Image (cartoon, rainbow, N blue to C red; front, side):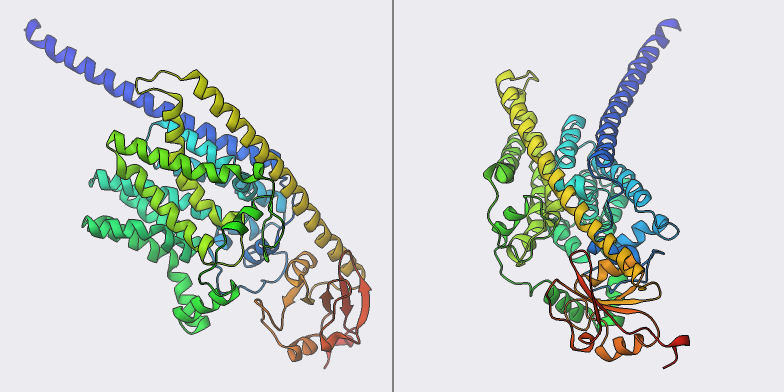
Length: 498
């Protein structure tokens, strides 16, 4: 009896040891990913000042659910995802600092979940390296605590593509299927058109291999995230095609536009390069941009030799389709546009770097590792310098808006009120006013409506210094603000009677 039980006991012991070892490795891998995500959040709070004011686009998104000012005009390209993302804080608090801290913590959690979606496809150290590479780009850190959609599209892309590959390899992995749906929904929730570009290779692959459940999960996620945008297009624009055409017009009529050089110019720290006709920055600023595709190609070569081509090729294809419209179809640039592509490229790039510093037997190559470490140190120094410059410039711009708002209050322009003209959207938000425009991308009113409003509440027309005011405001009293001029309509009659 004793002899007969020994094999069973030994077998159980080995199996338990294997399970404990596997759990330990998973726990260690999760801890590594959590450390990267935590460092990402901490870096945002230290390097991107939490008290920095809201930017122009942030004002539009936050004002839809916030308490600081009436909702700003919501143009055709925008989606409601960011507004819903900030709603838990913005709906009851006007504190920008609290909102920044909330978004920094939330983006750190999102990075952790996005990297965790790739477990089993690449070693934990590769995933942690990918997370570190992506999280230390200046634009990733800059937009982590901001109410903007592009970084969240990047997180959704990582989740969707990682879970897609897992579900493809294991059709019984239900969590992966739900991950595909959730990642696709997050992308479409933030920017529906970007979501389609990212998901295009996945849809083609799902159809090609006849993985109908996977394709259905992907399509369901895109529909779930984009249905509100489509309904809004039908109700507010007369149809989906009409909204897409209007969005294209606002973005400068999408078509063949070589914007590669524009993207290079924007890497110096510009949040928006439109028009993008400045000088090209020093090569040290954009050298990493050309190294990135070379390392990605090396990662693909490594994957092909290792017999795991799909795991690397699919994110590369998704990165290419995500970047394509912003490199070849738009006439201006912003570094945030390419965040989804950078996130997807980070995984094969980290895999390539691991292959360079270690032999196939796991031994270090000290000389190669030293060169790469030196290059990464220089890269981080450049990223920090650009980030610091971008934060300083952005802080100054938003302080100007706050000072203009304080001066408008002193002049008697207080809520309820209306501002129109140059930079009316952000200045109106800081002042607590509504904003209006009779022409341009944000046109939402008429001159007659503005004059009618001026009979009951304070109205101001903003222009750049020396700028030409609208015809209806030429006789209004002129005041000079910090970098702006405002003409204020005559005080409304008592009681607001017309």
